[in-house]
Length: 70
Image (cartoon, rainbow, N blue to C red):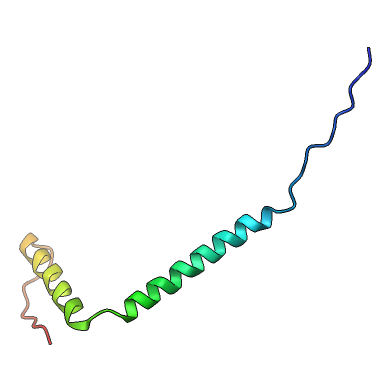
């Protein structure tokens, strides 16, 4: 019986490309979050924080305090 020679499997040398693409995607997302957080209206954020605080106070998680929006 003749044995067949095993052909070496094709090894891709482009594995770094996947890591590079993941890194670029994450970097893009970081800058997008930084940009969007820089464009936030401070008054809206204050109202959101107050709404969350009131919701937690009603649930009994936080103590009652007098907080106003500036």
